[in-house]
Length: 320
Ligand code: ATP
Image 1 (cartoon, rainbow, N blue to C red):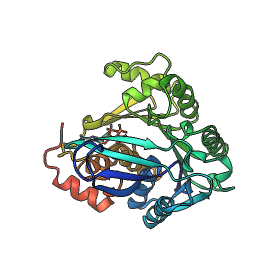
Image 2 (cartoon, helix red, strand yellow):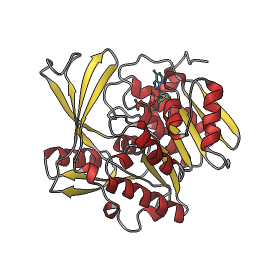
Image 3 (cartoon, rainbow, N blue to C red):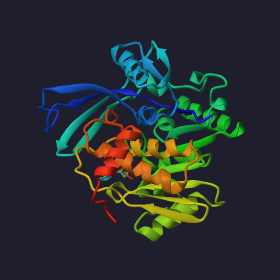
Image 4 (tube, protein in one colour):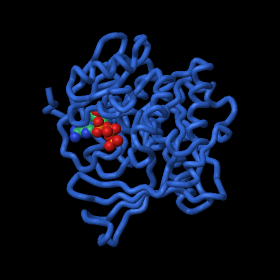
């Protein structure tokens, strides 16, 4: 059972057609995006069977979400909620390789996700459940859905992965921290940037590498978890079984870093469900993250194994 299941909100995404404030830019591209389906699509590209659970509105963007994610080979279990619209994100291009995202998701169909949306027996039948810290901050019912899924997974001996993915627009840190902490508590695999990990550890700071080492230890007091620290252009590190493995980043021409974190997680999980070593998982994850930085779009360019091979073959100047 190496199937992965994930749940969360996927929204319509309008991206400005050129660099500039959306107060003035008049063209935009229509697409979709959401952290969990970004991960799901990436996993599917990597040949891993994956199910996404979510809610969409009874509207054109909802139909687009279902069609596009399903079109990527993801098993889509989306409830259509007639009472709320599909959420929306606007992406403003602020400069070469930089952007700002605005969310229109309060009260959306996706945020009304509930534990009853998760089909009976599904969680128990998979190899790994992946959640992000976004979903439990969407609403009380979405938080209940997350907690029920992780409890079911743990009871069935299914691995649980959590990407902290703290979004300050959803809740202030003091509200988010205990909610994220409660999810991380149940996880076998935890992903986060140093700052995100510091949010979850009471009084935690991520000032330097020894502070990060301390955060990882605080998140894994009994030594049973894998703590994966995403460090952007510097690559990533995994703390597991009392040791740490570092993997340097690849030097790439950055077009758009949005989605790198999700591709990274998918790369890591693709190895995890196949029983790979920490070093192998980090290498694939770093490659997936780097490839995503070289193309626009949050998930569209998620690489296949052949594309990863080609990227690594052409990467004659890796950062040491
Ligand atoms: P986001 O939420 O914006 O998708 P994140 O904060 O979750 O990103 P990052 O640490 O920015 O995650 O990036 C995830 C991974 O992608 C990094 O660990 C690295 O492997 C790769 N990556 C990100 N930025 C770069 C870069 N500039 N050059 C090379 N690799 C990168």
